[in-house]
Length: 489
Image (cartoon, rainbow, N blue to C red; front, top):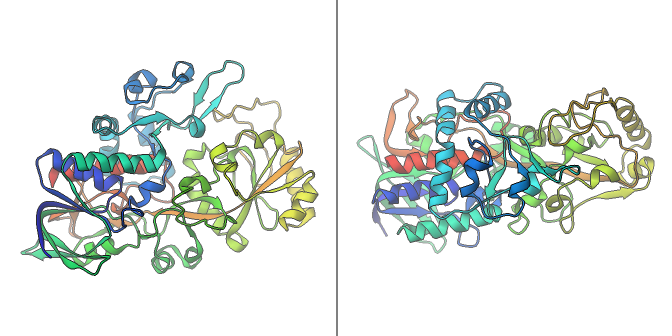
C-alpha cells in the first residue's frame, strides 16, 4: 500500500489544487490526498462565495478575465492599487499581519488571477454582492476593494480546479486521511495515510505540501485556543478541518505562527434547521446586510457599529461580537426601505429565519425581546441620525447616527413598516493560527530554519490575519502561496 511520487499535496481545496497545478506544470508527478470523499470534497473552498481580492486598475485591466456580461459597459469599478491592499491588510489586523507574507500576497495577486484563468478557471463581477445600482444613472457602483469572484461560487471553483488538475495528470485520492509526516535525516520524505475502506499506507515523496485547513471544525481545539464559548459556534464550511495536519506538522518540528486566539467568523442564520456545513446552501446562510440596518442582542440593545466600514472589512469579526452576547445570538433589524436593498441570495433564500411585524413593539414581542427596550433602542437610533447627509450605500457616506454605540455610515431610520428581524448567531469560517513559513511557503522550525521537503499553504499558513480579515483575501492567499509551494516543491 505504499506509493512513490514527486509531490504529495494534502488537501483538495483552492490552495491545494493551486500547489498541484504549479508542480504539475514543472513536470512533477503529483498526488492529492483529499480527506473528503468525492461528494464532500473541496474543503472550505467549496462553501465560499468565490470572491478574490487582488490588485488591479479597474475594468479595462481585468475585462479579459471576466465572463461576458451586458452590464459591464455601465459598471464602475475603482482601481485597487498595491498600497490600498497593503493598507487594508494592516487596518483590519491592527498591524499584526506578517509583513513579508503580506508583500508576497500583494505582489502575486494580479498575476495569480491570470494564471488561474489560463488554467481554465472562470471569473465574473459580483454584482449581487459587491455593487449597488445608482437609480439616477443606471450604473453599477462597486465598493470595498472587492469585485471579482469565481463563476458559480465555491462550487464552480472546486469543479474547475478539479478538471484542470485531471487534465494535467494530477492524481486525486478521495476519502483519504493523511496522518504522520515521514522524517528521514531531518527531511520530510512523505506522509502516512488511511482511507475510508480501511486501507493504510505511506506516500513517499520528495516534497509534501500541507493544505488541509485550520482547526475550526474541532470543538475541543476551538475551546482550547479561542475560548469556551467557541465550542458552540456553528461551522460554516467543511466539517473535516479538524487540525490534524497542523498537529502532524508540529510533531515534525514546525513552528506555530499567527493569531491562535482569533478567527474568521460571521453573522449566520441562527434558526435554520440545517445551518452547519450545508453543501446545498453553502454561503447563503450568511447574513451580510447589517450595514443597512441595526443589530440588537436578546435584550433589544445595540452593541456594535453596524456602519463602521464596508461589510468586507467588518463581517469576519462580527461573528465573534455576536457570540459574546447573551445566548450567543442577535437580531438584524430592518424596515421596508432597507429590506428592499438586502441581498436576494441571502435574505430571500428558502427557509431563511425571519420575524415580521407592522410595528416595532409587535416586532419585539415576536422576537421575544423586551418591548420597551427595543422601542427605546430604535427611537434613540432614529433620533440620532444626521438626515442632512445624503445616503449612498456605494461609499462611506458619513451619514451617522449619534446613538450609543454610534453608527458611522449608512444610518437609515427604521420607520417604514413592515419591520423585519433576522436572528443570527456566530458562524465560524476558519482559524488564523497555523504553521510558520517563509514567503516561498517553506515550513520553518522554531529557530527559523527550513524543514526540507515540507511546504504549507491555505488556511494552515499562519501569520496573514489577526482579529479580522479583508473579504476575498483568503482565496487569493491560497492561490498565491499554493502556487509558490508547487513551484518550489
